[in-house]
Length: 316
Length: 256
Picture 1 (cartoon, chains in turn red, purple):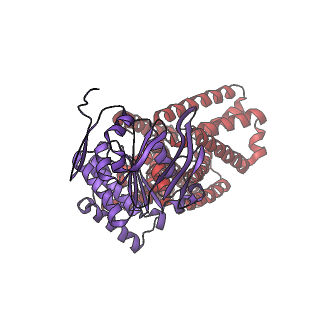
Picture 2: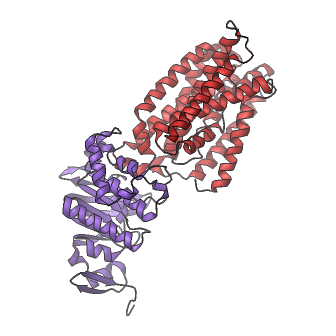
Picture 3: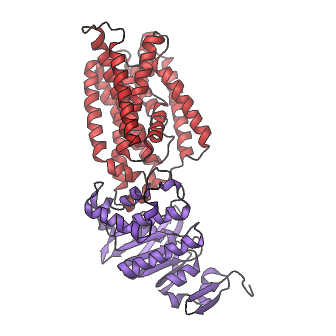
């Protein structure tokens, strides 16, 4: 009962925040301000769902509470791709590929990266959390440096485009891209919904899952593919979300007080949307755009990540 | 009947099982014993299909297990491994309900609920039903996991060192439960076990392994002799038998 109450409160908070986001200071301007805000709200909802579902499912597969796709370098790979595209084709790449072309290429690359992670890291279910964590950070760093190197070789105009890619923001989403994103995320979510009971079993670990009749390899491949789609959508829609996933997933576990995905996934979505909405409201109305959503969210979630590492001291 | 035929398994260059052929009788409790590194757990994991053999095959009722779909296999063979660091927030009842996954794939039928109740009842876990698994003691947790395995209602139950880290009371509880599973429900129980006294007193059949090969196998009373155990473990044994069973004393070896 208390769990249900908490969930309802959270969704109520989401609803209130969404209304506040739409109408505060808008003077009921339905021609310009509110449609613009609706687009941002859509980006926030889609992004929130992507971050929450991808992080929680990834943690279930990896069997720990620290690793998320962002930590494992998915976003770094995305940024590297954007840098390479601009280096190779200059500003033409934006025109040449178009929003959706870029999107498709990004998803393909993330799928490839997922496959590589699956092949190298989840073989035989032998995964050492600290090894994976270290590898994720090193990969992120190496790819990040490589991206910077590329950035030094391009013109200021191109650099500005790249900057746009590398900072989280809800302002850049175009209606067409929002529609594609919504469709993709919807499809991925349906697939996740269909495998909800299997996800609960996967959380018991590889051996117990196989013993309960799960085709482990195929199930993990499917889930990693779904994660790749979700991360590609969220990264191209919002930019890198870094530690948000860890914060969202762990808060969701703490509030849900059960490991069932039927509960933790919707709760995670609500938490992610709340955080994004709150950050966006703060940026728009308190900081007057003098800071960005990415900075705010990472400040809170990064601090949480640090606290989590210190508090658990390797027991995660 | 499980028939292991000329199984070979290596991890990298290290060969853990070499040309192992052995049979596990149906409807009996069989213990896999032997020193560390003998390949007992590897053999059990191969039967559980958690590992793939390098060569050879394992037959279940005359059919190669590699040809059985993993979803169907889970209705014939249940495996329990050690679960030392379990951190998921689940109640005992929810955990036991996972045992029904091979049948219902997540949506419990009345029949599933009956099986869950029976499993909980079988191990007298009624009092712990709503308790969270991550808050239980090691022994209680092992019982909860065993209940899940029982709820799976398979003909064959495989257990990897089920007594590890348990106190004597819980160890006896688990072994008696396994004995009853076999005697009352006719299930085939195969377990890897280090405590020779539990193996000697609770199993019908013993498979003794050493250095990746089966050293000897047979009915428990034939295998548990002073000279055979000495050959297997390379220490002296003194076996005392009475009407309540036998005690293998190896704590105070004489002449070693």
